[in-house]
Length: 82
Image (cartoon, rainbow, N blue to C red; front, side, top):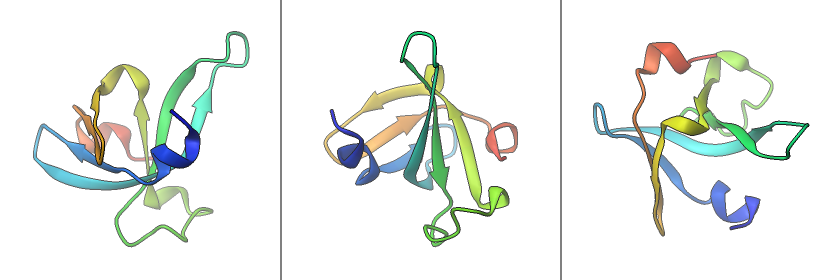
């Protein structure tokens, strides 16, 4: 899967069935090149890239499934707000 394909998907939290937004960036481990986390802009805040309060940092281990249209995650929203 390509980065541009990830950015087209909505991120849904299965804990409360809320839409967290769309992927705007990735955190990578420089040593092994693996994805550490998804950076998600809150809904309606896509152009708020330089405002950390508008972002969620979702650890990769909290990603449950990546589907054709959405990414399911299981997080506590207060824990992942940057």
